[in-house]
Length: 418
Image (cartoon, rainbow, N blue to C red):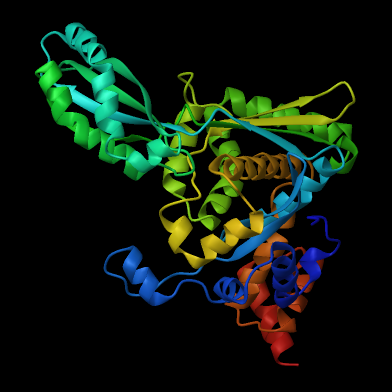
């Protein structure tokens, strides 16, 4: 398999599907799922009060090599230029080895909030005295996870000072293996709460997973050819743009949005929880007390750009929509993932490369040049263009450098009247 296919974006939709299906050994049913999306009866089983479903375009990012493996990465997004940007930027790392990733594991935190404690330090000590009992109680609720090597591995006890009192907060440290883990962690936290109350003589209120998955950190690193990015001046501008984002939260918010353009699209395509991943990423960006860049960019001795990304990524390949949504299942098969950690690595790789694509555009021709060309397709469709007229409208808009909707409407009407 190779993710480097010259002119991939020039292929028709059917040609792309055929190529991906052949390389990923997709069945006819999986190919049909890519084309038709989510059946209404399945949507009705997934959420409440169903009246339909909304489709988001699903594409694949090409030119990715992650930990030595060639991979197409499915991305679900409505925003033009995101998939093209990732594919283009990935080329700059391909010949230099691609993207390399590592993970701290698949451990999540469950929080149990205990109130009305007169002696919080004493209660904390009591909880640790009953540590083995607490862990045993929790693990009895999910013997399958324990059999797979997961389950509660430890506990932490935090004292949180608030305006009214000092809360005692028990953290269950749970290895959720190939699941994102929310259901398992929440079940354990709820089931052990009466025991916590008996130990502390306090009152348990909240019992829920934390989406700041700081024990489930994924790191991605890539070396990118300065020549392929447009030269040393652009590379230096990229480093300067990163330094700006790391120092200024107003810039960091948009900088990290560029990271999440790639990450959220890949998370959604795999059927995972985009809101949980986004919450964890932004909380992690503020872990020093100031909101900062999730990425770093440096120039190495060879004169190439080196980028790194570090963030919590709680994603799974079992449970939830990853096993019920037919398109999500097909997306996982396209990537050939064998574990949640492998999936998280691919998603982090997309986030790093997507950030580079944004910074490169900002450091050179500006963000609107490539974006508006792709956005013009949407405007052409809005104006009523169909078939080959769409491309002709876009081409004329590009030549005129005029992407206003009223002008695209004029062009469309003119071409349709031929």
